[in-house]
Every structure is written in structure tokens, then in C-alpha cells.
Length: 584
Image (cartoon, rainbow, N blue to C red; front, side, top):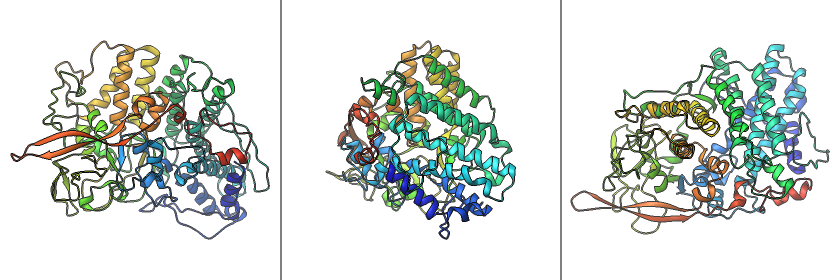
């Protein structure tokens, strides 16, 4: 940790990279200024504001899949989609890429590739930047009310980056407001998981007091932290803390490691704390699902990811107008992209339009026509063989992925990584231009799911749980059915409802950097991530029909030590007070 803090000091004091923020195409995008000392930063109001924007710049760094972002190789290989077994890596599928390396079970404490070490470095860099801003902002010629607002934002961001560390590693060293410099000797032990949860939630409570609600936020501040964002991140932290991995579920039997990586014992009341935190966000009465089932079924679900000003987004990584996701994920016949392609298991997860899973005998699923009558979120998330799409002239075209198709989208007759599918979710279906999308880091659908999960675990599958899930399914465009159940079986047990909720998470939040963390906190990753990544092998018959079979593309591996990431051996060597995670 010592050398990392020294590196952070160099970045934030000796050579400060400033980032401009303005309304328009480069809103919160980086612009490298001249090298400035900390004195120069905090004696100029514009430089001080830009320094805060630099802390925001990394807020969604784990969401990225681009090989151009800080050189992180795992994102070129599909990133979180691959490590959550939602997708297979396509263009960059070598074992040296971090996502395949992790998914195939080759991660070790000795691995120091960029995509692994940035999970440690980037949060610590921004925690230090937050502390530096708070310690020196009074030197800046900024009005007192604006300073108060900026301090609240920095406090929120510090808590956010601590959350990213805790979900990845467990308990972390809590350094408070300390700003370490190059000459400081740093050998700080880890705080317990409980201490970290208490610190993060108390900091978010304090930040919420001084952050505006989104409806009164100035237009030029849109995208920055709000009261709702602080309460929602707190709710997510408490939901994680109540979940099986952390609520007395450490994989270690050593008392010290158990306290560092979870609460030592289970307490059902933690679900109640998470429930109350979710209710606090709901009760703001600000956020809502974006609903439009008139344009087409589930169109609101599609449209949510295309618009900047969005009352479903509670926290987002701001981006200028862009075609970034298209460049990452677009079908090969229309340009670059296809860094990750959906697995067959992910495709099978989507319900039918009546809300029933495909293995339910009443679902009306037809294996000979597997893409008919599916949950509308399927059509808004997956490009499948024969799906309509739009080329760069905005003309509707068919995407054919079957063996022998005449475009670059076709599955090879043998070998290769193609799965028969491409990702549609979040992509702009108008092929002619850019979109104003931002990265969805936390949206209201997650709050409804978290509320349903916590309520079910604490009180059982009561009507409020059903109501929250129905809101999700109504917006999705699922048929109500004759009993207005939207496919939800009446009188479920807690265990049955838990499975339904977890399936809903998988579909509703697909490809949004949730799956790899959800199956860890649920402690189901040994099942969910420990199976082959499969493809659908599609061949065309002479009469125009298709045959479908399953082939294995990757043999993914997950074992207990993967529930938490290892602190690299280099970091342990530099800071011996750190204790390694279980199994590493």
C-alpha cells in the first residue's frame, strides 16, 4: 500500500491532472491541463472545481470494457460481463486478458496485470484526492455555500470508492481524513468488515445532509452526487452487508479473517436495516421507472439507457454524446465491437412473455422456435439469429448468426468463440448517430429489487414483495395474465420467492456490472459461475427452418477463494500489516 499511496501523492500533488467539466459533449470528460502544484490548484476556484471533477471521472471505472481506458486489459475482453458469466469474450479472448483469466480460474495473488491491480489502485487514488480536496478547499476563493456542497460531494465520493474496495476485498484500512505524502511510512492494518460498513454508511448519511435532492439540483450540476444517490449507495452497502457472504458467511474459520471479511455471526436484523434504507430511497418520491409499452412492449426498458436526464438513474457515470457501447459491442458486420457475446445460459434465463421461466411446463416455450413469445426484455437486450437491427444508414436489416450465413456475424462451422448472439441492451438502435447515454451505476429498478429482496428475507413473501416485482414486470412489458400476477406464483415460500428475485436481478440488471457481484454476495457463485460458457450452434435447413444445439466455448472455474479478490503479494510485501484474504 505504501508505494500506491506514494504514487497517489505524486498524482495529486506534484503533477495534478485536471479535468474540465461543462455542459455539452465533453461533460465530465477529461481534458488534461498544465501540470499544477496543489498550491496552484487550491488557490484558483476553477482549478479547485476541476480537481473535484477528476474524482468523478473514475466513478464508473469498473463498468468499462474498452482497451483504451487506463490500459485495462480486462475491459477489452468483456470485463464484468465475462467474469459474471453473462457473456463470453469474443475479440480479445486470450488467457492473458484479465476477464478470461478470472473466469477461467487463473487469478492468483501474484497476478499484477492492470485490470486486477486497478481494483485496488483507482479507489485508493480517489480516496486520497477526496481527502486532499476536503483538507485544502478553504484556501480556494469559492463561496462558503459552494464549498459546503463540494465537501459533501467529496465525502460521498470517498464513501463510494470505499464501497468498491469493500465489495471486492472485505474490510479495508480506514484512514479517515488523513492525507499521506511521499515521505510517510505507511503500514496500516485492515479494519473489520463491520467497522467499514459503519464508516461508509455514516459518511453517506453525513453527505446526504448537505447534498441537494435531484429535483432542486442546478442544471449545470446534473450528474453530480445528490441526497438520493447518497441514500441509495447506503442502501446498497447495507444490502451487501445483510447478504449471505457477509452476514456471518465468511469462507474462513479463522476469527481474525472472519471479522475482516464479514460479520462474524448472522443477524436477521441486518436485512431490516437494508429494508429501511431501501424504503428511505423509495419514500423520497423522486425516482421512478421509465415506462413505455405503447411504442412497443418494453420500449421504456430500452429507452432508459439512451437518455441523460433520467428519473430512473440515481447514480451514473456522465458521458458526452458517444457511440462507445456500439464500438465495444456492435455486431461485426456493422463495424468493430463484439468484445463480449451473450452465453446460451444467459439467453435461457429470460422468461416467456407470460412471465414464466422457459422450464415451466405452462410457459409455452417451444425449443424449435426458441426466440418466440419471450419476455420483451429479451428482445431489447439480445440480438439473436434472425433479429431485426439497423445499419449505419438506419435501414432495417436481419442479423444472421447461423453457420453458413454470408456476413461476419455468422458462427464458424468449427472452433471460434461465437455464441450465436450479440448484446443489444444499451446500444443505440438508430445506426446513424450518437446517443447521450451515460453508464448506469445505480438506478431505481435496483432499489425495487433490493427492497423486495430485503423484505422477503425479513418478513417473507408478503404483498409488498409481490408489488415491487410487479412494478418491474409491468415496465418490462410482460403480460398481466388473467389474474394480474405477471407470472408470479401466488403464496410462494421465502425460498421460492428468493429464487424468483434472484432471477429477476439477472434479467433486469443484465450486463450492468451486477451479476459478478450479486452471485458472490448471495454465495451462489460456486454454482452460478462454475459451469461452461455455452454457445448455441445454429444450422439452417433447406426449408428455411433452423436446428439448435449447445456447444461449450469455455470451461469457467470458480472456487471459494474467488469470493473475495486477493490483495496482491506485492501490496502485502510493501505493507505487512495487511492480512491476505482467505484461500490466497
